[in-house]
Length: 411
Image 1 (cartoon, helix red, strand yellow):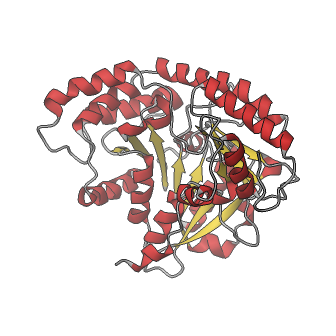
Image 2 (cartoon, helix red, strand yellow):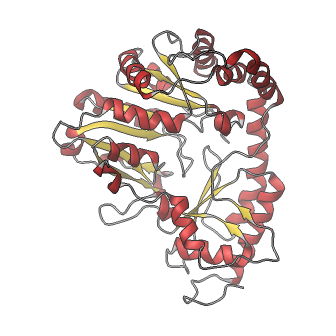
Image 3 (tube, one colour):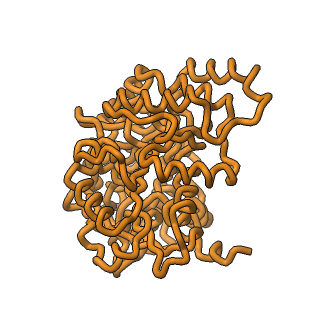
């Protein structure tokens, strides 16, 4: 077996399952999960109709790995509508089976493990695929903490020059998971300068770009590059997905865009990897990328939900409305001594509400875990259910402002 598999950490949800294995949630309350970031709003009917109509003719031939021209044109048309960017559909975009698959595969394409000290720089906390992709490529991850005092911006200045010198790939997530923070142009300018100096590729994960709470839409890495005169998008690949934007996580559809030279090599890798998108999914994707009305409606649903839920939780937790995404990144009460796992476990037992311990989404690195003492709540269900969960959490915190002794009942 591949010895690199032994380096993989248990996925956060496996750790959560183990954490909850010794307790029984309150049987008097309906279970509510805020643990997994899986969109629960209804899939638009027109996307379902496009998918159904394509079945009649879309299953009789092997799809091309590069995707149909109609889909690539739909992707570049969306980039023009959203960011006023003009990209070549033949060379600068590539359909992918969701951003998760593509993030992993691009890492295998980019990393040269024969170079001494091959390094992948990742935010901390982070989407766990970044770490797994780095490890299985033969690289070593280097984790960059987020700073609560700066709206959870990553402390890129904390990375030593010798680490940047051996870095081959940098993962950026904006809007961030789990913090919801959006990177400003000044941060992009700093990272582009470092990429120019050291030659590493930037993978910009933008799957939450269409769920935001400010009037100004989140800045894309491609958009930032264009504003800074980097119109060839050198060493930059952006990842975009329909899952959150259009409430189709089961469709497994997105695209990558950016540096044509990297796209060419990525296509070569994917041709052998066997990751062509089904023609049926391509047809539904064309329909989804071509419509913005459902995206506005989806965003308004989240805005309404967060406006109702956040104040309830802010009364008892260190939490505020994020820039974007559908998560709340909350600090547990000081009386819990930073034990986010104990808080999540006791909350589950007392109130049948699942939240994800923040320390499970981060790594102990350079003496600290930037997720410790925080919890991630995914407000993906309907507003009434999320509001009920918030009220249960508030009730729990008021009843248990401090960490309980092990073995005591939270009831």
